[in-house]
Each structure stands twice: as C-alpha cells, then as structure tokens.
Length: 387
Image (cartoon, rainbow, N blue to C red; front, side, top):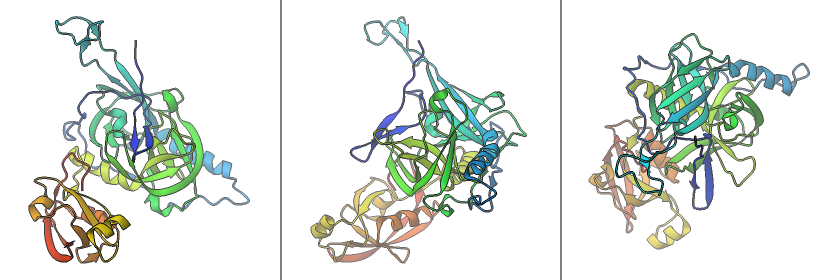
C-alpha cells in the first residue's frame, strides 16, 4: 500500500511547525544536479517595477482585484507530485532483511505546489522539503500538461528548490521587487494544491508580520519569513503568496498546526537570491564565520559584568572555523563590526551576510572588561546552521 506522511518539527522549545508538503520521501540524500548537465542558465525572472497594491475604489471592488490577480498568476502555478522508491526490504517480524528476501518498504508519494519563474527555460520554484529525496518528480500545469522535472539544486537553509522541466514558452509568474515594500495588514493571496487533491485552490488573508524566524523540523533556522493568516494546508508548500497585483511576495512553507491563521512564507527577497545561485552553481554559497551568538540579555549582562546590553554574545565557536582560527571564544561579546556599532545581534548577522567568501570582517570584541580588535576571513558556509 502507498503511504503518505507529513513533516513535523519544533520552532523554539515549545512551538510545533508543520512543513506543508502533503507527504515527503524519507531517508535519501539531497537530490542535486549540475545546472550545465540539465542545460540550465541564469534565471530570466520577471520582476515587478512597483509592488503597490491595486487601488480599490468606486470602479473596482476587492473581489475584482483578487479575481484579476489570480487570473494573472494562476496559469504559472503548478502541482508537484513526487515518488520515493523503497530503500530496503523488511521481514514480517520487523527485523532488517538479513537474507535478501522479505517485504519491500512501501513507496512514498508526496504532493506539493510550485510556480514557474522562467517560462523560456522551464524553471519552477518550490520548497526544498517538497522534492528532498524524491526519485521522480512530476510537474502538472493548470492546462493539464505534465512534465518530468529535474532538481537543479536545493537551498535547505532557505527551503527553496529550483526544478527544470523540458518545456518552453510557458506562463511565468512576476516576482515582486521586494516583499518589504508591502505594508503590514495588506491583502495577500495564496494559491496552491492543498492535500494534493485540489489544484490551484485560492485563499485570501492579510500580511500579518514580516521578518519572522523559525526552527524547521530539519533543524535549520528559517529566516526573514512572511507571516500570514491566509488559509494554507499540507500540499500548499511551494505555492505563491501574492499581492493584489498578482506579484509574488513569497512562497508558502510552514504553519503552526496548534494555532489558527498562523502560516509562513519564504520572502521573495530570499527566493531571488537562492534561485540565481542554484541555476548557476547547483547550490547557494553563503558567507560563514562559525560562531553561534545571541542577544545580550539582562542575565548575560549581569553574569559578564557588561556596561550595557549592546552587542552579540558568543555562545559557541565551531572548531576549525574562521572564528576559531581568529581566536574568538565563548563569552566574547562582539560590540562592533566593520566600524559599525552592534546594538543587537541582527546587525552582526546582516553585516556578515553582506560579505563575500574571502572578505575580511573587522570585529570589536569585549572580554572581561577589555576590548580587542579581531579580523576574521569569511569562508563558505558548510552544512550547518551556525553563522
């Protein structure tokens, strides 16, 4: 019998996060392909010049705005069905197959959503967790055409994957210039395939918040997420979250199942950065220092006898990392970076991410009341969540 399952995990210590693929194959390594082998190239994405919502006045109702937005974006929204073959066989008693016979592990079938970002080259964006470990990927367009997709690359840190299908002259989504132009409280539209049963279902809500961070079930920290109360369900994963102009603001990725109306989408800013590198290199190259740090709390300030709560306190240093080689150690407090004051931890994180691999970053570090200068050479981030 074919099996279906959903992915669940923790966000923080008590918050349960549900990634929105209807089912995901298990136990396989990330399925990456070199972009040159697949005949790929830079993504010719279509970006809106203005993301301001369509005005709702006397001659245009909100219903008409939603209808027009769906008419514009809907043809580029696809359904994605995956199949993961059995990885082994098992004896009826539940023990591993020691003798080469026994019942095969059932195939796992998954369902999610995606949207076309380059109609000329057949590039489709979806969540990394939708296609992770899949042996076959079937992409179905709203006009019922079906294609076998190949994963050009996956960015598990951002939960973004780029899939290529053998087709051209396809309908193409327009990406918003940035998600941050859209004010909190704006109407947003989610399109996807909930539960893998209902193709291109449309729901409407508001943009509830920006810049949310969550720990996903795979242990990665998803950052700069859009929060929305638009109804999204398992199977919506990878579908677009759009403004009233039909421009993509983000890609739905997770919900809090114990709550109502708390869903999350990867922002279009993150999507654009990821897919450009996935098309070129098959992976995303991120700057890496190798420290885990946190805000300076009142307890930290008292414990370390700090003059104030500014800076980012180092919790752990990854052995062999650039930070380790530069001499950083736990309980160091980074109070300056590249001549800028670090009044909160996000300043340090954002500044590091603005650098390229090979750049040098200058840190002002306080320890036991003394401040010293530390220079760290940025490296490429390995498969880790630390900065």
